[in-house]
Length: 370
Ligand SMILES: Cc1cc2nc3c(=O)[nH]c(=O)nc-3n(C[C@H](O)[C@H](O)[C@H](O)COP(=O)(O)OP(=O)(O)OC[C@H]3O[C@@H](n4cnc5c(N)ncnc54)[C@H](O)[C@@H]3O)c2cc1C
Image 1 (cartoon, rainbow, N blue to C red):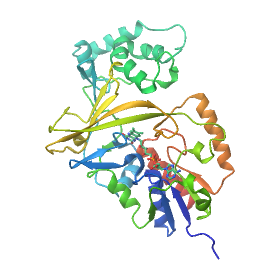
Image 2: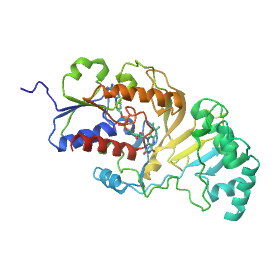
Image 3: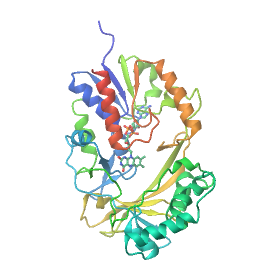
Image 4: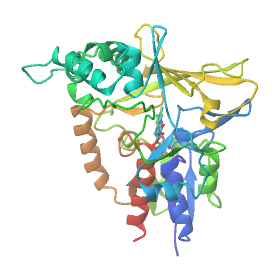
């Protein structure tokens, strides 16, 4: 007789866990999804405020170049035609992002691609180095010169990482793409948009017909959950799964301050970055613009970078040599647990966009059900 109640225990109800659960359920497997938060969805969870879908764990724009991923996600939602065209506010001046002809005009008044190119080249030449760049500051100056670096990169990057650009490794920035067209579309991917009605319906559809328990932390009832299914899909932090026995992986965290404003349009754009060091937040998100809302009020979120401590939310992995060596050692430990599949951005310690997350979860499922 089978001693297990379920075929699969899925730890975490974010995009990774929900996709794996869905794929297993489609194949007739009995799944239990447990989620330590109060609600499902992980970081793509939205909260409805003032009839606006608020991205409570940070702005999420779906984009991909992979037609299969695009078609897969479109099974669970209809996407609108939102194009991410963020702005940067530096000491009261606005600049278009990513760096393009509009930005060059705003910086230097250049009117043609040739003028802009010449200006950028002369800025770069002033910082050509005889040695390879020793830190992020040198690297950025070499790639884009003083004006772009000081106005649009330095303060933002230092706030994001919580230290000086001279203390950051050069490898963080490998290239700084510049466009010599008047094109403010931040992404270069073929497909992009926001699911109409927010991200929750995607998760709800993925989890349809599957047993889900929220407010339930695997690590607090481990013995019970280890024995409930022969296979576990773990989408939480890999170091936490192993009780930090090799040490803790580092993360950057964020704090969100969400406010309702008594106006129908606060900033005229979904995303505005604040690039000056003196402003403590890195961006303001105005959520209604993701879905072209015309509600009478608006909801905005100030996003503050924060130091990660145990108990705070791990948002961005810190991809330096120390952490990648440590992660590899955790991967070796994971090989001693063949009944556990580590899947998703926390378990794989990778910065995954949503399309990468979908892909990774589908690969895990394919591998499991081949
Ligand atoms: C601020 C921010 C902005 C982003 N913006 C974009 C964007 O614009 N476009 C884009 O494509 N991608 C974006 N991403 C990436 C996107 O959020 C991820 O690709 C995706 O959410 C990862 O899904 P996941 O299921 O792997 O992880 P998560 O969403 O983190 O889900 C993991 C779930 O597991 C639960 N869990 C963890 N440990 C346990 C445990 N012990 N017991 C029970 N449950 C547990 C967690 O509570 C969580 O719900 C952004 C990420 C961040 C942080």
